[in-house]
Length: 212
Ligand code: MN3
Image 1 (cartoon, helix red, strand yellow):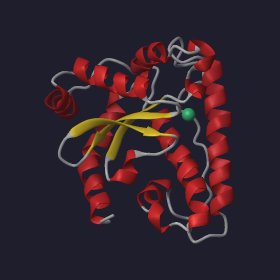
Image 2 (cartoon, helix red, strand yellow):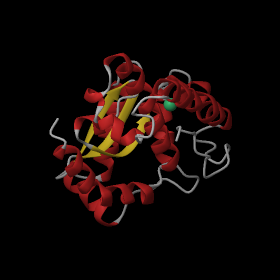
Image 3 (cartoon, helix red, strand yellow):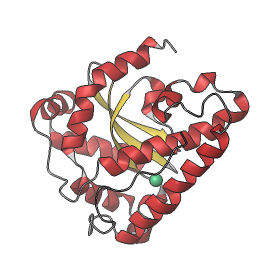
């Protein structure tokens, strides 16, 4: 049951002008595929090859030490990018309503304050990594991670991830990471994020119950 790169649910050019077609092709077909290939090569023939990336990322300490760094980076790359493609949409943007909208307002004061905080975390991430909206089981927060680390390894349920590796934006935005982030907000599918929010308490609880 090797990992695979899922097809996009929209055409490569569907997120224009915010995210350009060439970036989507390279990011999805080449960069994501490379994480999948490296994860599969590392996991093949081990007792971990049928374990889903999400679970592996909560059990990194249990991996054989010679596999750990490679699997952390590349199972992380698989999980993070699968989340990313699903949480973007040509019909994205705006702001969330309902329970998620209320939870964001409760945690950050307003949706605008949340966007500011996520952007600051994303701009402030030195080098390559991600900024995240997470649920710790009781409240929402913004965190950032280096490389392909996912907050789930720290017991936090990831609701939305923003990729700030240069491969995510350099072709169109060059060094203007902040401009890319402003544009990316127009692609966020808040319906998908709201579904994750519904599942998050159980996820955060199950992560905590691993007692790590
Ligand atoms: Mn990426």
